[in-house]
Image (tube, rainbow, N blue to C red; front, side, top):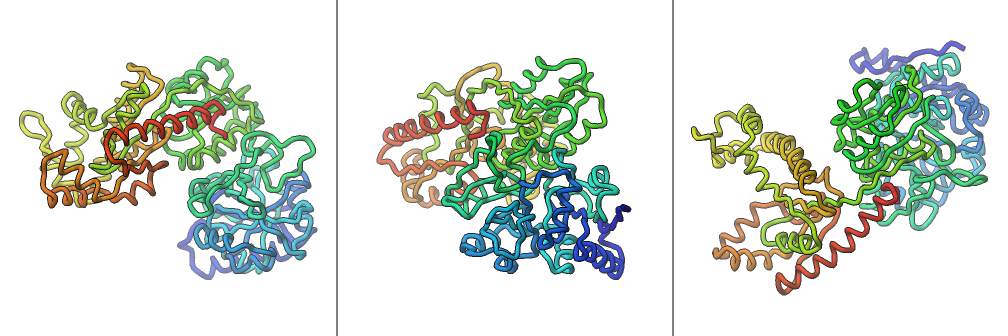
Length: 557
């Protein structure tokens, strides 16, 4: 079979050429053929989801087990009732919020959807991909497209048309080249036929964003461990070893620096490594594929399959991979790595806890920090670190001067007023300053934690979110309080009048900013600082226990 290539990655082509290619690609699907299609997550291997014979071709081309169900791709929620029954209102709410996008919803199927698509289940997964080319092809074809990832079964998924041709050339009718995938991991799969909803596969839409809409979501055991013998998967990727290169993979979980050191101990001369960018230099002499910065889960998601696939062209005998924590896209990246490893995981002892504390003035942040100190924690004051770096680190001063010009006095001291006039009120310049601060402050914080070891740290940073320091924390906690209480506290603490106290509060971020951006919120409505400190201590004791429990389970529960 000759596999045709439909090159649609160049959007500047004449409209008539684009329309002709879309019609030709849609015709492949209508006529029962197989078509590699781009999505924002990974490339899919598409066929008419209502045509049993066409669907069987997907399983044959991939070598996919017949009990592994497929996902229907549709152009929008208006198609849901065609293929699903008893669609709950929350499905439409999620579709309004996240479609087109990397969310697959499991719903009860209508009889029009054949058993071949659903692996005989009474449910079907449906999603609307966020790729204009594929959406136009689906609309032109007028059919739902069943499409698993376009790789040979068990291999890492494809994120470029070239990857698809590597696995499928000569086995399918065509491939649509829509450019590289933006997300890089498959869609998140949420089962809406159970209460509470259940996460069957983590993916390009983080669990936290779903819980903001849905509330509590159970996480299926298949996310963190293999299904038991005889269990039938309700969604793709639940049962079988997936995403695996030819060489065996071992995943190492824990704090990035500790997992890098552990891999160093485990390496053999022929071992390969998948690691965070900042540790690449540790593994000289080995084949290394960087996963991205340890703090950037979006880049990790884009790179994870490419890293796994690339090893197949090398002679490595085994692969060791650093694993991100489970927050945000880290849950999906970690799941893909562990699936590739067949859940061969090494857990590095990681009992240290780092909690970021932020919030507006007068809310009680100092009491919260004292509560953590009373639990034996070390407080890292980011403002103090910033001031000391300004005093002692010439490269830090040079970076600021290069970005903002002559903002230092002749004696080398920062002209804070001039820098403030430069950045405050200019979002782009303030973001640039925050990025510079993060680049220098974060390594210094790491150095201090290494030289002053503790089981518990508190990061004191009013600009915790803006400077991206939340990325290194196990949890971020916003301390908030009613405005009137904050006004009275500031007046009493600083000896200022009410008008000035209100001006200071109004110049800061509102509480809603912290509630949206932080992992947790600690509300301070206590009658006295002593009462709130005790309340905060009780709160942090429970939070620390929860974080440690997660770490003991490799971040999976």
